[in-house]
Length: 347
Image 1 (cartoon, rainbow, N blue to C red):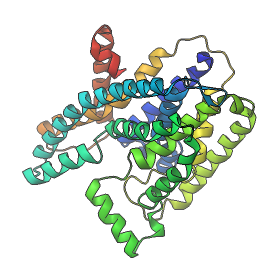
Image 2 (image 1 turned 45 degrees about the horizontal axis):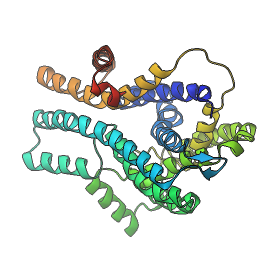
Image 3 (image 1 turned 90 degrees about the horizontal axis):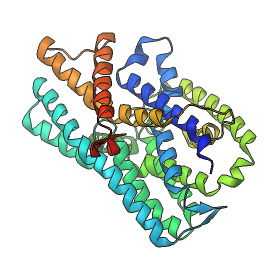
Image 4 (image 1 turned 90 degrees about the vertical axis):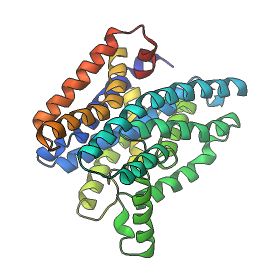
């Protein structure tokens, strides 16, 4: 595969990282049609990242639709991938936990409440962007044995079922609201914080990336059709967001039916842009990872200072500017020490 065509994937990932940052700073609430704009843009970010991770994990494993390496090589690649992702998770999670605990203390939360929140975060839903890292590990552990046996397609139905369950506990909760199943859904989401994880989100979208890598040569012959599918599904997502916006939902309400066809089509579209791009996009790739990982602790840090100085954690443009300044300072510090081992993992 020609790496040049993936430059637009790097640029799109950077755009998504910035949009996710703006979403977590509640900036979409300050613009007309903000909820719709958020659904049509920032909500694509994490599923797209999962698809990209699956694709780049698997792209060197296949040749014209068949596994082109030994099983031991696949397992070795899995070990290296998990080691890298787990290192990022273990580096960032203590920082996130510390800052969140300080936030809770300043807000007057009790020790038992804080302990439960920390345990829930570590086990079920790591704070900030870290649930994505946990999800990547879970998904790759599920998918790799099927890659080795050449049975990746057998995971499609289980992955779709997992995603369908997630939809009922997320955007499509209105379908079971007021029923016994709806009460169970409320209890489950309340207990685990979020049902977005490696099984319900990581598996469907990372599997999509793996299947794209497996069938890459065939897909290249259908790029025009895929681009049309991208446009149609994006419009479908917008229509879905408009229709379901006034209806009841759970969790972040950020998972949509149309994400399932849109994300694979969107990844293929961005990966096959034919316009030559002379600029090097490695920096864009590193920036997207850095912003994605750093933005949550940066928001927590600014919130802590707000609580100390003003007894309030209210957001706004000033808070957004402060968070961006912190992110810029951290990224500048990391990039200044490119030879450090930390740089290899955080970018």
